[in-house]
Picture 1 (tube, rainbow, N blue to C red):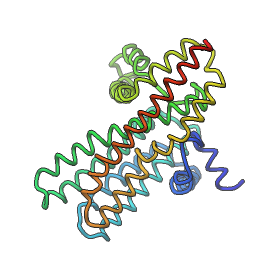
Picture 2: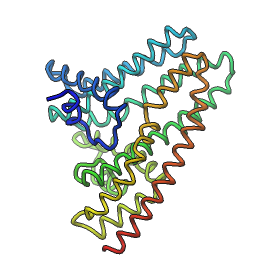
Picture 3: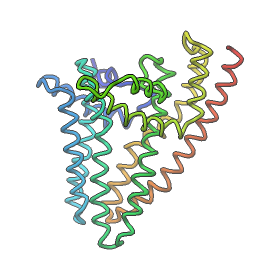
Picture 4: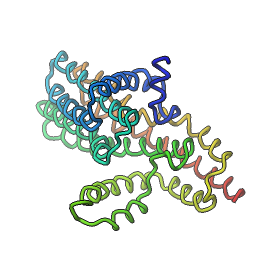
Length: 304
């Protein structure tokens, strides 16, 4: 079997990952996953290595020497390959755990925390303390919301493409009931703690996309046996062109701009790009998706 076909079998969805993700991210990640499988390495161990490597990359962005910055860039790419490999390895071996899911979602936040920290320390010498305000707005406000909505819309697409059982589209109200049913005891404290933070993350996603929440709840109420195939196909057809925007908002494009701006000696450009261009992309995608949800709701109302 061709390498490309083997890689595709480890993907969650072809619609949500374009050629860049397939060849630049997923294929190297798959090769690492195969190596780790043969070595008997657990997916959680791969995730931990990803966190350490990605966090370490931040220090290399502090220097004004582009050769040192290049090391940080390579480390960040390496960490991202491992971040892909852990999920692929988990699907290949069936070793999926709650700890792995928690750490996997935590990994990217750790990488970028240290990258923002060292970029701000570097720019403080020229900009003064004001750069921390720009970095905080860019990272804590813009970056977090952009990645959250990009991830959410990908899961919404997979909900219609693959079905509710195979998608990872969680709802905060359902998660809250699970949280309330758990106790702070030895057997349940970790899952309860995980849900505490995950519920807040999910609520943040839903706050950005209330049209999705209304549509999903209505469809599940009107069609308890499953969303009709025609509605699913139409949603996927209209949502598919928006999927590249989700990748722009999460990792690919922002990292390219980070690398280019740092290599040019002007890393502040990355902060500005994130706070302007990527914010415009986020608003555009939300607007397009809202129209899609409203149109589908009207057609679904006729069929119920």
